[in-house]
Structure formats: structure tokens, C-alpha cells
Length: 419
Image 1 (tube, rainbow, N blue to C red):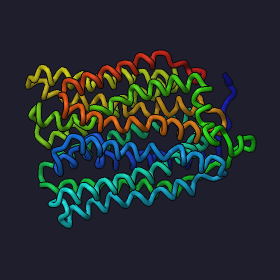
Image 2 (image 1 turned 180 degrees about the vertical axis):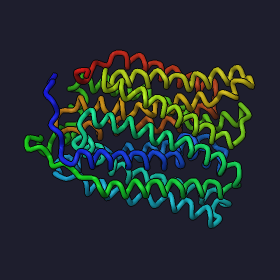
Image 3 (image 1 turned 45 degrees about the horizontal axis):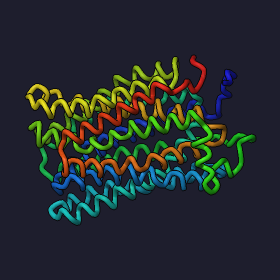
Image 4 (image 1 turned 135 degrees about the vertical axis):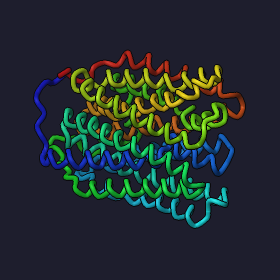
């Protein structure tokens, strides 16, 4: 393992600031459009079907992950990735379309509103996946390892601090305004955050490709991307961990529903959940960044995987016990989500970038996200489990899978020399 110092890329300071602003603005926007709380709550206002609620989560995450291998194949041999990053920004207008439809009265017609919402979600996330592959590749070249980890840590703290205020605002909006105006305002505010993020992206400076970067193939021609997966033991371990921990998606879309239907919490509690999730993200980011810089991404993954077990386990205990005090501390579930969500980039993504051979960042990102795409269907499976079995089965099965992922994380090896 090389211990030579990294050569600093050009425009480092400018790119650090620009990536940070983009990261924070996008994170704040996603709080208003949270696929774990806001979107399930909104879909639940239009239908009582758990399968449809689960389908909304599958549509959100699935249409972001599925295209990424194809995008990686398309862009890996291109010297500049910025045109593809910019091309994907057009999908952000879909949030304004949802808001406008609600203000114009379509919320009174559940089926057309559901269809429009799903179309907009799929368009937004599909186009964002095009931007995403390019964004990750540009960032991996524009920011050295430590700068990248520091940017993510600062970004998560900043977006988390802002997210606390956003969570309080969400609670006020849901309490003060009736449906559908409340959700129309939330989607519009998400659109504002995405617009700020888009402006920041225009100021990015993409570093030129290295002269010794591999050519167009890079293990992606034909079925060659499978060789990337099976030839690298670290990749296989990371993939196994990612798949098992990702099974948390079985239960995530139904926490809000469980809190209302079983634990008796009001709809405005969604704001409390958002605050809990973002506060957890702030606190854990302050801890994870120095851990990543000092000991490496594999320790961050272990912490996140352990925290991921807490959410479904607590929900299971609360469901079986059914006591008032457990209902009052139900935000613990979303604290768990805040922790694991903070580790996806600082832990899983950085580990992936550190084990990827030079020039194969798009291959690793695209193949990883494509392989884990079936996880997005787990929300539908979770809805089926809930309707055919019970919350006990749903939360129990989820806990078992995620705990297995934590055990796998213990076998991850260091991806670089500790600082």
C-alpha cells in the first residue's frame, strides 16, 4: 500500500467550497423531500395501501441506482464528465411540478396525483443518477482523500444544523396548513434548495484526466464489470455488507405509519422525526470525520452498521411492549437512520473510492449501485410483509438482516494506511 503523498489537484480551494455548498444545499432540499419521512407521509395521505407506500420508496431509490452502470459505461472513457453532471440537473424541476399540481387542486384526485407523483419522482431520480455518477468521479479527482472526507464531514454537520431548523419548520407547516397545501409548500422549498445546489455546480472546475489513466475499457465492456466485482476481495466484502445493511429498506418506509397507527403519534410528529434524524447526523458527523481521517473508512462503516440495527430493533420492542414512554422516545428510530445515512458517503463511498484502481471510479460506483439496486424493491417486499403478516414480522426480519450486515462489517480490512 502506497504511502506517497497525494499530488494536490488544481482549483482545490474553489472546488472544496463549491462541493461543500452543493452538498449542503442538496442535503437541506432532501430534508424537505425526505424519502424516509416526507414522501411516505405524503403518499399515505393519498392511499391507505402499504404496497403503494413501499412502491414510492422503491421508485425513489431504484430509479437512482438502476441506470448507473449504463451511465458509467457511457462516461468512463470521456475526458470530461461535467457535461453529464449538468445534463442531469433538468430533473429538479419535477418538484415544482408536484407543488404546482397540489396548489391547483390535483391533490383532491388521489389516483391522478399518485401517477403524477411517481412519474416526477422517477424522472427526478433517474436524471439525478446521471449527474451522480459524474459528480462522484469529479469529486474523487478534484478533492484528495483527506479533503474529501473533511468536506463530507463539514457538509453533513452544516446540512444537519440547518436540517434541525428545517425539521422545526416542517412541523409548523404540517400543523398549520392542511393537506395538500402543506406538502405543496414542502416540495416547493425542496425545489429552492435544489436550485441553490445547481447554481453551485456551475462553479465547479473539473480536473483534467491523468495522462496514465486507463482507456475506455476499464473492465466495463460487455460483462467485464463482473470481473471488477469478483477480482477484488475488498469489493466483495463491501458489497456483502452494503447489501445486508441495505435491507433496512424493508422497514424504513413504514416507521411513520407505525408511529401513527400503532403508537398513536400525530402527523406533526414527522417534524420531530426529521429533527431527530438531522440532529443525529450532525452529532455523528463530528465523530465520524476524525475517525475516518485517523483510522479509516472501515471503522466508519462498522459504526454505521451497528447503529442501523437499532432502528428496526427499537421499533420491534416498541410494537411488542406498546407503552406510552416508548412512544415518546420513538424518534430513536430516526436517530438510527441519521447515523447510518451519515455513513453512506463518509464510510461506504470513501472505502469504495480507496479500493478502486486508478481510472475505475465510475466502474466501481456504477457497478456497486446497480448490483444493490434490488434493495430498492425491499420497500415493496416490506409492504407485502406488513399486509400479509404483521409489524412484528417486518421489524424482526429487518433486524436479522441488518445485524448480519454488521457482522460482515467486522471483517472489512483497512483500505489505506492510517494517518
